Length: 108
Image (cartoon, rainbow, N blue to C red):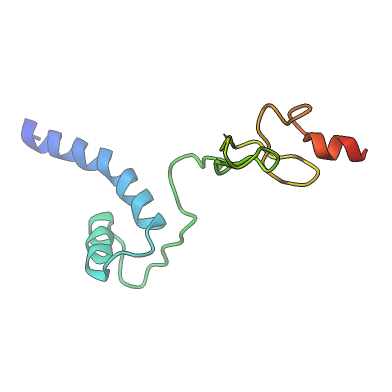
């Protein structure tokens, strides 16, 4: 095997997991692009390609950054933290601890 052929083979082996992950997670892509990916990966026209077939590790989704429900709107404090009781977004100032907000703490 020549050097150029070796480098091309290594490049293709490095690209295939990425293309496989992209192909399994894509939903809104033109059919011709999906067909090119399938051809590159060696899938036939009747092969079942499931969306859960990803070679990479699954990453937990982060909570959305939202406005604290206890702060006045003009302060516009944002947080990812949620109260475990009411499931509302709470900033650091209005949380009693990491699990519960001040309003739920007063009720208990």
